[in-house]
Image (cartoon, rainbow, N blue to C red; front, side):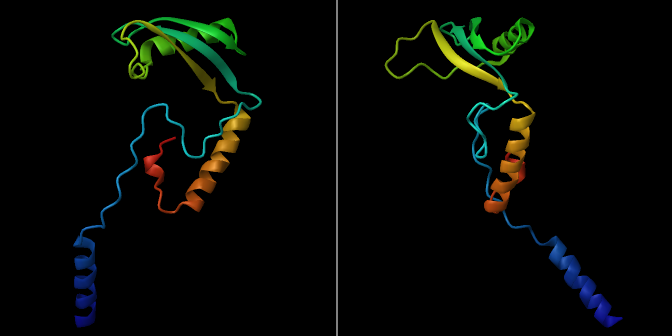
Length: 138
Protein backbone atom coordinates (compact mmCIF):
# COMPACT_ATOMS: atom_id res chain seq x y z
CA UNK A 1 0.00 0.00 0.00
CA UNK A 2 2.81 2.38 0.90
CA UNK A 3 4.52 1.70 -2.50
CA UNK A 4 1.26 2.45 -4.29
CA UNK A 5 1.00 5.78 -2.43
CA UNK A 6 4.56 6.71 -3.41
CA UNK A 7 3.90 5.87 -7.05
CA UNK A 8 0.68 7.88 -6.95
CA UNK A 9 2.45 10.93 -5.46
CA UNK A 10 5.19 10.74 -8.12
CA UNK A 11 2.64 10.49 -10.94
CA UNK A 12 0.63 13.45 -9.61
CA UNK A 13 3.79 15.54 -9.20
CA UNK A 14 4.93 14.67 -12.72
CA UNK A 15 1.53 15.62 -14.12
CA UNK A 16 1.55 18.94 -12.29
CA UNK A 17 4.96 19.94 -13.66
CA UNK A 18 4.78 22.54 -16.41
CA UNK A 19 5.19 21.22 -19.93
CA UNK A 20 8.32 22.33 -21.77
CA UNK A 21 7.72 25.52 -23.75
CA UNK A 22 7.10 24.99 -27.45
CA UNK A 23 8.87 27.11 -30.04
CA UNK A 24 6.48 29.64 -31.58
CA UNK A 25 5.17 28.91 -35.04
CA UNK A 26 6.89 30.76 -37.88
CA UNK A 27 5.21 33.97 -39.03
CA UNK A 28 3.11 33.36 -42.13
CA UNK A 29 1.10 35.71 -44.30
CA UNK A 30 -2.12 34.48 -45.91
CA UNK A 31 -1.22 33.19 -49.34
CA UNK A 32 2.36 32.21 -48.45
CA UNK A 33 3.37 28.87 -49.95
CA UNK A 34 3.95 25.95 -47.61
CA UNK A 35 7.47 24.46 -47.56
CA UNK A 36 6.18 21.42 -49.47
CA UNK A 37 4.14 23.34 -52.06
CA UNK A 38 4.57 22.34 -55.70
CA UNK A 39 5.12 25.42 -57.85
CA UNK A 40 4.65 24.10 -61.40
CA UNK A 41 1.26 23.69 -63.02
CA UNK A 42 -0.15 20.17 -62.90
CA UNK A 43 -2.79 18.34 -64.88
CA UNK A 44 -6.25 19.12 -63.52
CA UNK A 45 -5.34 22.49 -61.98
CA UNK A 46 -7.63 25.39 -62.81
CA UNK A 47 -5.85 28.72 -62.99
CA UNK A 48 -6.26 32.37 -63.94
CA UNK A 49 -3.76 35.21 -64.42
CA UNK A 50 -5.36 38.48 -63.42
CA UNK A 51 -4.80 42.22 -63.57
CA UNK A 52 -6.19 43.93 -60.48
CA UNK A 53 -6.66 47.69 -60.33
CA UNK A 54 -6.06 49.10 -56.85
CA UNK A 55 -6.76 52.66 -55.69
CA UNK A 56 -4.42 54.77 -53.53
CA UNK A 57 -5.94 53.26 -50.35
CA UNK A 58 -5.28 49.69 -51.49
CA UNK A 59 -8.92 48.91 -52.33
CA UNK A 60 -9.64 46.81 -55.41
CA UNK A 61 -11.50 48.83 -58.05
CA UNK A 62 -11.44 46.34 -60.95
CA UNK A 63 -10.38 42.82 -61.81
CA UNK A 64 -9.65 41.42 -65.27
CA UNK A 65 -8.74 37.84 -66.16
CA UNK A 66 -6.06 38.06 -68.84
CA UNK A 67 -5.46 34.30 -69.30
CA UNK A 68 -7.07 31.19 -67.83
CA UNK A 69 -8.26 27.65 -68.40
CA UNK A 70 -11.63 28.13 -66.63
CA UNK A 71 -15.13 29.01 -67.83
CA UNK A 72 -16.72 32.46 -67.62
CA UNK A 73 -18.71 31.70 -64.46
CA UNK A 74 -15.59 30.55 -62.60
CA UNK A 75 -13.70 33.67 -63.79
CA UNK A 76 -16.54 35.80 -62.37
CA UNK A 77 -16.28 34.10 -58.96
CA UNK A 78 -12.47 34.33 -58.99
CA UNK A 79 -12.70 38.11 -59.52
CA UNK A 80 -15.41 38.34 -56.89
CA UNK A 81 -13.14 36.58 -54.37
CA UNK A 82 -10.29 38.93 -55.28
CA UNK A 83 -12.51 42.02 -54.83
CA UNK A 84 -13.51 40.90 -51.34
CA UNK A 85 -10.23 39.57 -49.99
CA UNK A 86 -7.22 40.82 -51.93
CA UNK A 87 -4.55 42.68 -49.98
CA UNK A 88 -1.86 43.97 -52.35
CA UNK A 89 1.72 44.34 -51.24
CA UNK A 90 2.68 47.96 -50.59
CA UNK A 91 4.07 49.86 -53.61
CA UNK A 92 7.76 49.35 -54.28
CA UNK A 93 10.07 51.68 -52.40
CA UNK A 94 10.39 54.94 -54.30
CA UNK A 95 7.22 54.32 -56.33
CA UNK A 96 4.68 57.08 -56.38
CA UNK A 97 1.62 56.32 -54.22
CA UNK A 98 -1.66 56.18 -56.05
CA UNK A 99 -3.74 53.90 -58.21
CA UNK A 100 -1.88 51.00 -59.78
CA UNK A 101 -2.41 47.68 -61.50
CA UNK A 102 -1.19 44.51 -59.82
CA UNK A 103 -0.79 41.22 -61.67
CA UNK A 104 -1.48 38.02 -59.76
CA UNK A 105 -2.43 34.39 -60.34
CA UNK A 106 -5.04 32.23 -58.72
CA UNK A 107 -4.83 28.42 -58.81
CA UNK A 108 -7.47 25.92 -57.78
CA UNK A 109 -5.62 22.63 -57.28
CA UNK A 110 -6.72 19.53 -59.12
CA UNK A 111 -6.75 15.97 -57.79
CA UNK A 112 -3.18 15.22 -58.98
CA UNK A 113 -1.77 18.28 -57.16
CA UNK A 114 -3.71 17.56 -53.95
CA UNK A 115 -2.35 13.99 -53.84
CA UNK A 116 1.21 15.07 -54.62
CA UNK A 117 1.15 17.84 -52.00
CA UNK A 118 -0.32 15.51 -49.36
CA UNK A 119 2.58 13.09 -49.97
CA UNK A 120 5.06 15.99 -49.87
CA UNK A 121 3.52 17.23 -46.60
CA UNK A 122 4.00 13.81 -44.99
CA UNK A 123 7.64 13.72 -46.20
CA UNK A 124 8.23 17.25 -44.86
CA UNK A 125 7.10 16.35 -41.32
CA UNK A 126 8.95 13.02 -41.42
CA UNK A 127 12.18 14.76 -42.53
CA UNK A 128 11.72 17.74 -40.15
CA UNK A 129 10.67 16.33 -36.76
CA UNK A 130 11.18 19.74 -35.09
CA UNK A 131 8.28 21.18 -37.15
CA UNK A 132 4.74 20.95 -35.75
CA UNK A 133 1.73 20.29 -37.96
CA UNK A 134 -0.43 22.76 -36.00
CA UNK A 135 1.80 25.53 -37.37
CA UNK A 136 0.71 24.60 -40.91
CA UNK A 137 -3.07 24.29 -41.06
CA UNK A 138 -4.57 22.50 -44.05
